[in-house]
Amino acid sequence: MMSAAMLFRRGVAGSVSTTWRRPSVAMFGTSSTFTCSSTSMSTSTSTTTTAVMAPSTSSSFASSRPWIRGDHRHDCFSSMATKAAATPRSDIVELPPNLKFHPKSKSSPFYGLEPIPSKSKKERKGKSAKETAEAAAPAISAEPLENDEGDLDFDDDDDDDSESDRLLYDLSSSSRQQYAIPLPQRLHVPIHSFHTGPTSHLGTLHLSPHTFGLHPIRIDLLHRCVVYQRNKRRGKRNAGAITKTISTVRGSTRKVRQQKGSGRARAGHARPPHWRGGAKAHGPKGKVQDYTTKLNKKVRKLGVRHALSQKLKEGNLILVDGMRLESHKTGGLVEILERFGVGGGKRRKGDKALLIDDLQVDENENDDGEGVSGIYQGLDVNLTVAAGNLYEVKVINQRACNVYELLKYKKVIMTLEAMQRLEEKLERNM
Image 1 (tube, helix red, strand yellow):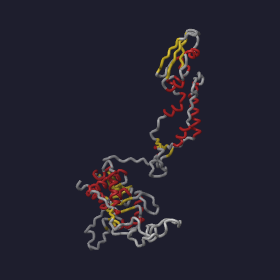
Image 2 (tube, rainbow, N blue to C red):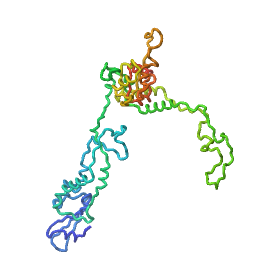
Image 3 (tube, rainbow, N blue to C red):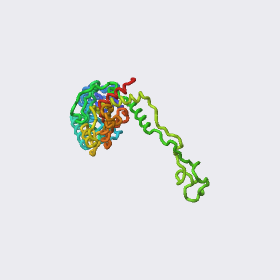
Image 4 (tube, rainbow, N blue to C red):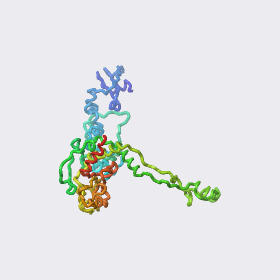
């Protein structure tokens, strides 16, 4: 706090009221204003001290210092104000620094997006210096403030380093923006011809909302069904297998060598598991190892319904009129599947597909009774043989439809007969 004499020296002779302010305090918050009244250049001085909680807007002081006025309060910090005033674009996404994604990985949420090029450190410094100089131009001619604590210096090197590490992506450059058709319009699906491809539509069909229109998708049920099926495939192993432990393996119990002095590792007997001819560590004990778990039948049915609803929501459920083939050659099936965007041939281009069919043997088809109808276990024999060489295609009957296979293969091609019997089976006793 300055004395009255120092305040008087800063004034002018005559009846003048002089206001003094500490610049470092007045810039950022609460300040104290001291008013000194003087009638002449004499030693008698009347001093009044007033505490002001908010920055004063004295006309005589603010007129000569435009950066103190309300309309130019942040001109000296133009670089900081510019960053705060910039409105972020809605189509710009920033990659969090704690996540590491390869931009070319299909599993990355930023796959297919173009990164926004970041400016170099020199360009950012040159631009910020130019903007600061232009903003501080009207304040150069004014009287500079006396700062007892020294000039304020802001170092933006840390900000530049943090900005250079940021990764921004433009959502408008995404080429795979796909939106699901809302319900109930989603249930109206076209029927395609299996031999001509999706270009020809034979008609439309309204699917059952209880099987193909469930919303929202219960991911917890899908997980429980997948765990149940994987444990069931693991099944029962090592039935009756048994190995010998240290107590049952053949060998003497005498000490092999002395405890110290030989320079080798200590050994008590010649039957440890890591020695040749020793025991077996953690081997089967002769008990049946059963890995199967229990899951209610209604829960399994509900899981299949949710999986089918998810495939329809993704647009990966294709209905065809039939899957009968005239030849068992793999090349003919590859040409048909390529029209649906399914791979599996030598070129290996396309998605994995699950073919679901349900054929019934017609008793009046073969009068001789030789059984050459071409249907085995509800599937066309030519289709089964032709798809046997395609590692990305699997053919199953509707009775074997399960959650694990539906989630493993991206596309599901289903016949009308299989769809009808699936709806009847899954909606029974609901």
